[in-house]
Amino acid sequence: MANFLKEYRCEHCNKLFFKGDLQSCMVEIKCKNCKNISRIEEKNCNSKDLAAVM
Ligand SMILES: [Zn+2]
Image (cartoon, rainbow, N blue to C red; front, side, top):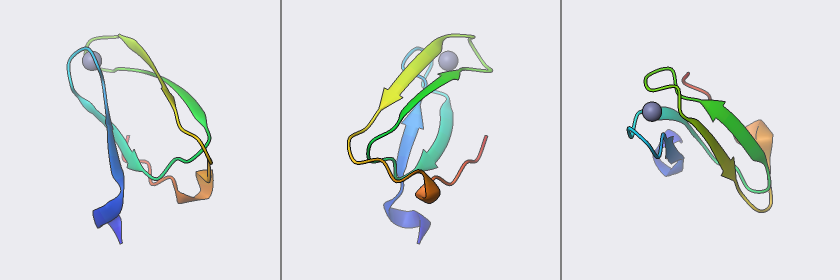
């Protein structure tokens, strides 16, 4: 099931934040590695599908 989940990574250092299937959410996340804050926005959110691996 996890195979189709999208990987969301820090755009600064490319550290993997989490895998999930976001469709219309905005997530703001701070990279634990480089402290860069990234915003991830997707259309058609379905946050129950989020499978956090943080
Ligand atoms: Zn980073």
